Length: 409
Image (cartoon, rainbow, N blue to C red; front, top):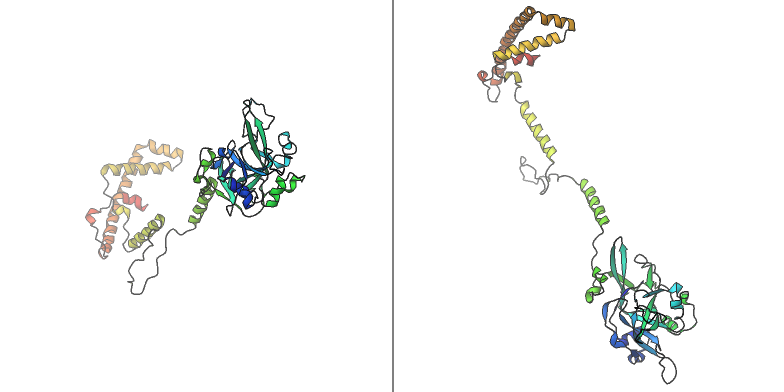
């Protein structure tokens, strides 16, 4: 398919591109070339110079048709179109070469209405979902491209005659099929151009083929090409495409996976000669050990420090219990004792207040005796602590309490 093109060629350049020799190109006959406006963004409905052989039946004195560069409108309007109908140049700006012999609009034009269209390049859009990216396609050596085309004439209600043409297309070449499934028929040699313009009875399949040579190149251009009003050298300026969304996501995950395999921090560099042995190794700038490792290291340091200090039981640091607390704890001990008995015995025990009171006296006496033993233990341990380099705890501040009984249990 071909729906946009670049053409800034004059009549002489068109003649040379279409195979005319130097002298013939210089003296080529032109028709309505004043209507042509050079443009980097030509679309259907615009005027373009095309080369025909006697498009108006003009013949020199010798009687043979001569080449003519005729400015025509792009977008075929068949001659049988009603005079009152508004022409639609976008309806037939391309014609499939495989079916031109089958459709009436084109079949009648093949014998005598062939022409060549010369442009510097054309544009094609690559569809990617809802997004379309235009590409500029041209020859590597910047020579003009020459397309096969058919032309016709049509008269409107005012009697004005318009010449229009359509560009023939074929299946895309193997190099361009990724971009689009159709491309214009490009003539790559003077011989193929002469055959097309000779009106000879030749099989069209032999000349209307895909252009497979490697000198046809392309590159992405701005999406502003979508507007027919956009024109100028910016149309053919190459741009750098941004990666697709899907590729960005894939790269993001690939980078994340790669980062997971990187070390969390750099290992310390080996010490240089002359460095102090007690000098801590430096961590590479920008990295630090994980928080978990830092906490684990700190815990190990704390444990080593504690290993050098005698253990002081928690019951030695408790404050003395008050009389009210002693009563509560005696009652709790009695309750716990009777809770472990069978239901019948527990009921009898709680029903006898005298027995409960006796139990209280016995337990209280046991507690007092154990406190006296605890005092002796504290004195012995404090005497051991005094020999250590650690700060001496004051016995008066760390008196034993009733909690020592439960601590030992």
